[in-house]
Length: 274
Image (cartoon, rainbow, N blue to C red; front, side, top):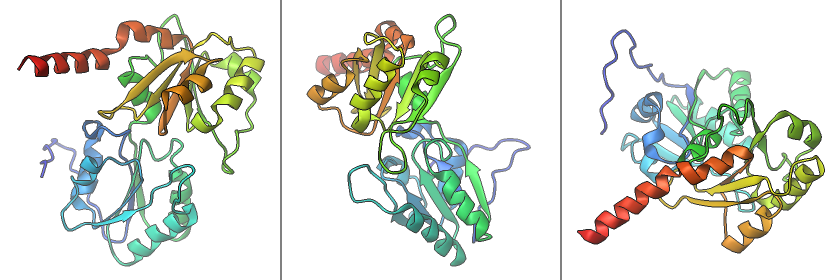
């Protein structure tokens, strides 16, 4: 097992029986786990994990730890949120150290707040460990700065669907005026409506847009397009969730900063030469 480093004056938290830790697993790449997340995996008795948690991350747990799948995927059979929250309570009341391992960050479109509220209401001790969220890591791995001096002084995160699975009721005009760069989670299914709403609100149909699928994973795919053509070209390219949509001028910097494609190209050349 990967050892935890010793940090002088900062002992690793003890995972106490009967408690729940809500931990962000990051966007997929196991190297983006935090040390607190690794510490949680090393101590947990039960790991309740999202569908998007990479199997390589689950392999870092204690071998005897129980695995409980609690995946939620749009358009597919998924665990109900209420059932997931009650499962956390049940496991904790059995005296287990319960790790709720969530893709990205628990409190950024991760429904971690809902789970924490249930734990608080039931008197279950809990701890929250942030993770790297997809809008930060996914854009970085695609070579798109989330912020860049002279281009954007603000960045808006938004969800592509509401709690009923519909296009969210957003003040599109205010959003369009207030944030030069937009990072849209879970928006692939409503991309035609979202693109049309943004264009009606004043965004240019030719605004640079990127769709990052399976961000940070070996099979990451990035589609560069425009706001008006994004939905059509995503369908033509067979882009599937999980996908992050980025709209804004910073997308244009990708032509200079697509480090991952260059890195993978070098690896392929090295492999072919050996």
